[in-house]
Length: 506
Image (tube, rainbow, N blue to C red; front, side, top):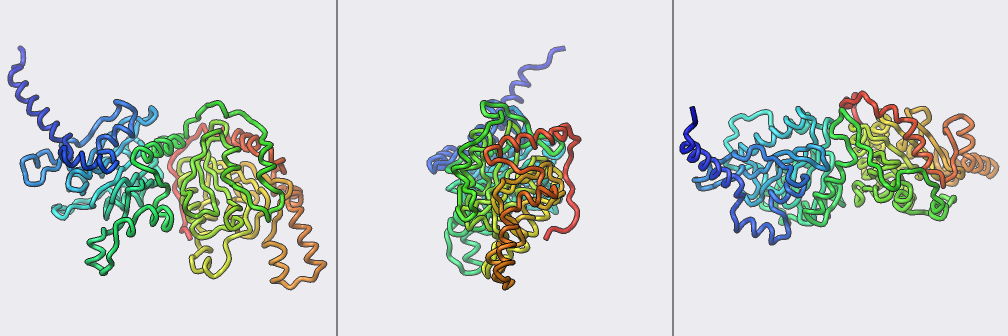
């Protein structure tokens, strides 16, 4: 018996009409205003994030019954779904600022939680794009629990989580970023617990959204955001690139990427960049660009905690995390911001089993009253615990100098799980620099000279006790790192799983 095609025609016509409403966003005028501001609309953002034609929306019919009301809310102001990024499946939730200022309705809140549950269940990366006013005042709530923030907290360390902030993001929406592994802000973005009107009402402070939580606040001063992007397209491209260094989840390993620069090679130029005298600074970033596979260096938080460089890269085609002192900034002394940045970075690298390379060139933890008031010691202790807890391959290299706790936080302590521990020939080591330490201890000239000589010969003294596995020619740094990664290659077979950290972080 045949079905009645006429009845189906009416049903499917109504289905398409409602789907068209779900996709209409805030209407042509608001979409045009969004685009006139140099931003992509929510659906353009989804198309840019995922491989062409791969995006599949979920929850499109949320708030579809609002069509005839006073406040229509297509898709309830959140475009959500899944697709492929460089061929691998991933999930995304994208706040639609053209619909009620991107505010979070009850249905949108459920959709956000649904995304966290799908990410956990299917073990998929999760990307949020944020531009919204937080929870709507008109929400009924009705004792809803659990919510998406609980879902994000549970998801942490299981799959990569990213937040791209592309406009003003307030309250609950901004908290999504705080629970993510990697946060990118565009130049048009701002984040805050409460926006300027609420700040004025609560504490009488008159401030713009840029002054309150723009990139100059959160990328540079607070470190709440990791990287700055010029615009929406650049932020999305950065997200796609970031994910390329990671496995899809903590049960796998990062994909290898072959290319024209994955083979061993000697780097003669390092001798002209790195002076053997530690009193002369050099650009660690330039050195890293030469050591890693060409074009693969992605620095994380370049504008925050400058004495340390934290970066993702590939060496021999394999994804690695790099923590390196920058002796061009305060001789590489580690301040509170640098240590906090590194601790978070190490936790993320450890969660997804990335090998970590430590390149050490510092006079210790930052000293002085400002450093003490900033809590540099506690931050350094947090970084030390983060590197000690790593169960991924660790490769340590002392380049020129390493003193006191500054050496320990850079994984120099012998027999602490390093796959390989190396040093350049002309390194200086000790509890503290000889000159300052001798002055503090009021040592006689003969003792001063002996300590200075011992520090200057540190590489061979420690290699003699196997504290270093080898002392290498600086030109062989890349090749030595490739060798270390090759020694740890059996770990790539797994088994893998989420890392559960015990104890209390400092």
